[in-house]
Length: 176
Image (cartoon, helix red, strand yellow):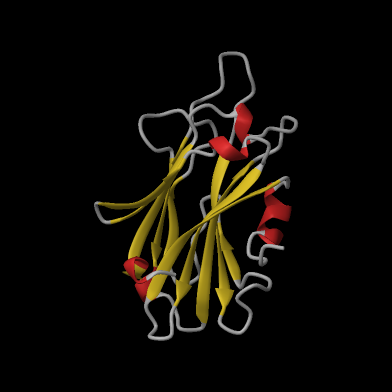
């Protein structure tokens, strides 16, 4: 991670998308955070935060959760208080998965999907999924603790063809 991306503390990841057309099944997108231990930064996640849950210590919370994309502005919002996260954790991956209840839906089927990563009022990144239209789940950002204990971030866009459960098992693995 570059030195320009050092020192993030409290970050918000927000997600929006357009609702389905009238008569079409609802499309449900979900922000998912996976937290990894120092000794296994690419192993199984120590825990996940998704679908209205929060981390055991309250440092990662999902404040808004939408199952339709209806509403004004961003439909889902997750806050990550990295500066409060236990030193036992070295890495957090954040991604977005599409619930697959009504048949296979990809990001190419979702209109105007956008994820925004910001710290306070400063926008760190935004991603619109346009280059991964065949994916059903996408990692978007990685937060990693450095040698001094501070947190850096990097864009980590990678598409998957997996349901949300399988995605949570794959999202932290090192790219092949």
